[in-house]
Amino acid sequence: MSGAWRAYGAEFIGTAWMVAIGTGSVALGGSLLVISLSFGLAVTLAILLLRGVSGAHINPAVSTGFVLTGHLQRQRWLGYVMAQGAGGVLGSALVYLALGPSELAPTLVAEGVSMFSAIGIEIGITAALMASILGVVAWCGDSTPTVAVVVGATVALLAFLFGPLTGASMNPARTLGPNLLSGAGGLLIYTLATVTGAVAVAAVVRWKNGTVS
Image 1 (cartoon, rainbow, N blue to C red):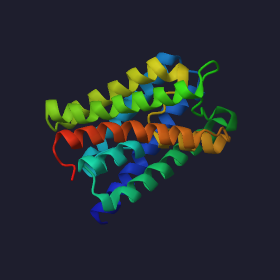
Image 2 (image 1 turned 90 degrees about the horizontal axis):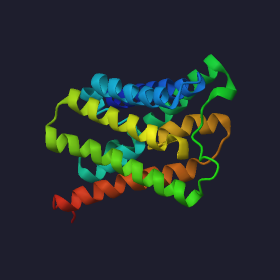
Image 3 (image 1 turned 120 degrees about the vertical axis):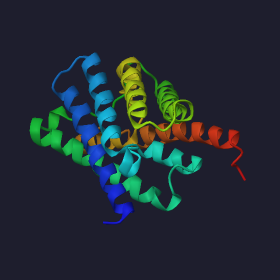
């Protein structure tokens, strides 16, 4: 199997794992703390196991940002995004099969939170996630355990703080499966907001590194 296909397979498996564990914890009635830790630990384990194969982005917004920063080859972007999207659907389908259609835990904006505020929150928290990924590599070196712990902890913290407001997607693939299978909608808004947040940070890093032509 070529390196590209191994990477796509890793992204597919890692994203399915993250969505199944994270949304499964919601479906099983976990507290906000348990749900946040479930997402964070799922991301941490995926990075530990798969970073050497694909980088363990498990997030189309992150992969899009990495194209700008040069961490992902442009010709692999579509394969990554398709694998992550398919993995998100599989992860949600596993929850569907195990617990039923009413337990898919779609990403939703809380009652009382305006759409404008929700978009701003998702842009901001995805930017924070992207910054944590790029920052830990820049400041702490290319240590997979360090990257896994920092990024997983960032996901958990942001999910804990902002999950009650917008579901704290930060990831189009996390939203795709549950929202598609449940018919909850909102896919375009969550996708555009999260990609905007990641790309904004990546563009700043690219500019600071002097790589903008």
